[in-house]
Length: 236
Length: 109
Image (cartoon, rainbow over the protein chains, first blue to last red):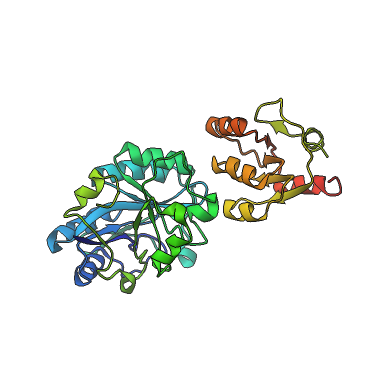
């Protein structure tokens, strides 16, 4: 059994708190009893290597991840089997972001950090913009590197596939979705939306602050994160 | 107003099969969030949007929109066009903004 939280932002996301450092995130996850987390910043994987290094020291699996905003302004949580795969996808995503400079006074700083939580640099390009990648193009990109494509917080009224695209496109082989913690009663939510029952559902925190990282509640019936990639996100 | 007249009035390009059923346009709806369009667009509407995801075809079908107008120079890829042709949905294109198109339609339908 694997207690997880696969949607956590670091201080590299402009909206992520400055205390969301690699060590703080991983250690908070360990304190919460989580076995596996994913660091999923907006349109970047810049702090994932540092978090993975901390995770190895603490015994918490850190899955490389990225929350990508598609051209349709749909947020998609993308999970990768390796940091190399994640960085390959992230390079395409970064190029697809418009060239808008971050305004830290408005959006917040975008901090690169190392595994000792030192600030090693600042991302100048605004990361919370829609990329020019369509929902379909992102699906293909993630698939091409062996990743898992999870439409994020489908229950929310902004930046969600259900709001922006009306329903989950059936031309893509999407196997899993994320329902946010804002929906407390998942069974009631699904009872009213039976078309969503065929998807494996991830329940993540979408934490931007340390206190929001999930407790050990949501779990997967597997022993290691590599099993998730073997089943392409389908829960075991 | 028929779809053929709408095309002339707004100087639109036909992206889908040119031999379409020339139905009546009885209203107009503007929107890009498909969940909203599904609940708000009315039968016979010319639906103006910048959304070009394949789901627009199903939404137009569901709402019985008279046609989809992709505005601001947005184009639809081949999969969307093929799907629209198979569902009998008309997709039209314009380089103008939704506001400009709506102003020209004002009083015409």
